[in-house]
Length: 256
Ligand code: PGA
Image 1 (cartoon, rainbow, N blue to C red):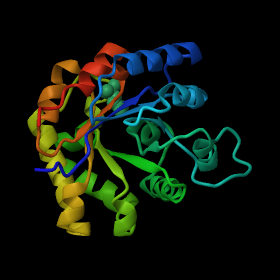
Image 2 (cartoon, rainbow, N blue to C red; image 1 turned 60 degrees about the vertical axis):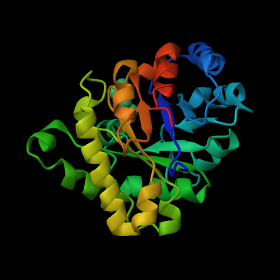
Image 3 (cartoon, rainbow, N blue to C red; image 1 turned 90 degrees about the horizontal axis):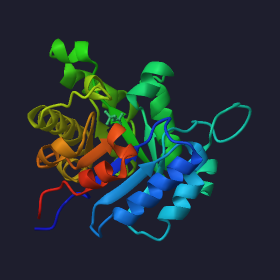
Image 4 (cartoon, protein in one colour; image 1 turned 180 degrees about the vertical axis):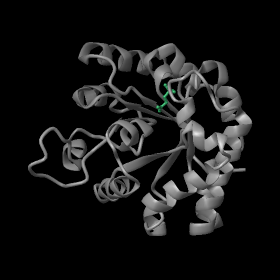
């Protein structure tokens, strides 16, 4: 049977690596990568995008992503990066709504929704992050919390636009903490997210929706996570900074 969804592993380098370290890391990843149909994405800091893009250029399953963007097209927004700037260096994906952006930079569901629309209008693909903090999980409200994030930022999109988006479920309590969601917890939430998509956009769109897992995903747990029916890959922070670890994660999908 033809697979309905692409498989993807995206490395979010966050605010790590200087220019040369970034170049070396990208070169190592490209050198060690075996041919496969897994979509491999690297999201380096803005200053490295052009160079990492040059390194990955011509490899059909490898793309570059930005970690953020501004929602306005241009103007007096000192320190910000526009959609056109990202387009001009060959960016394909933009990570939006990462919990660190929400937490440290006060990004609201509404603002993230605007950024999603700006990225789509610019012909790039948002990787939209959602996920609950620990106290919400402990209170048992995680499904409702994530459903609200989807509704508030995404569910006013047309079906045609929504279909272009990649979703990433990243429980905040698992990000950078070494605590991973168990495969069962990840599967439960990915299924719940798919159900929300199905309710809003129908069965066909929901079955085609790519949903990545993020939060302390590493070589030791990626196989179990990627074996879950509704987990289509990973958004990788810490482990994307070591080429061997990142490649091992890329190679963690079950055989067809
Ligand atoms: P982590 O980060 O893999 O270091 O937990 C994941 C993320 O924030 O995307």
